Image (cartoon, rainbow, N blue to C red; front, side):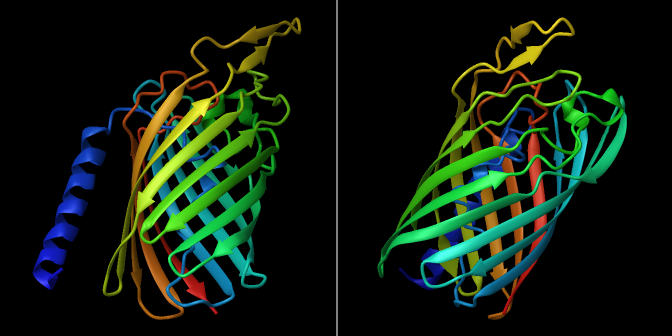
Length: 289
């Protein structure tokens, strides 16, 4: 492929992805906060292998007009390559929420995960992943709905596997929701499954990674009334399809900067768990050493 044809292909890919993100701005998504989207996340792939990676990012999101809540998250991430096949990842968010009912902020739910590369070939690889989203963030600040809370109020387990072949990545994951939270909803979320697929385009120091993610909740979530009755939440067993565009620029072996945008194609109608996003935008930088 000539440089001219490659550049044209690259620009067309960015243009199409931008149009899709813009067209879906009023739809809804869940993947910004749930945790299962850490499965198959390619944001920590490196062009040069260095064992230690520290990153910081700032992101913004919007719940949509129904709740009218705006989100800002500052996230610190640490990734350690234990050896050629094992990697440890830890991320800690600081969340800020603002809407018609008030403003809240505080440390959110950290996510810690362990990855093991089962196959590491020249053109293909298989990676297994297990993680935990720790219910550290407050989930009942000022007795506001979940859309305003710093955390989900439960500790969840996350399992997944990823397959890479050449520029393609295919992943699947499962999130086992933890206990009922102490929010005014006393919510018990259903478990989620995830399937995602992406493609990596490399041009000089740029890496462009468009992808599509599908999430399905396996059962309805439930709440608990003051009289301890368990109530199923109609419409909470739902599916969503999200598109994302990840742009990375490798400044040198040690420093990488990143822009990320995501928005849904399939509307998510129920937001009792506070995970609905009409869009998510994020910028960050990572140091490797």
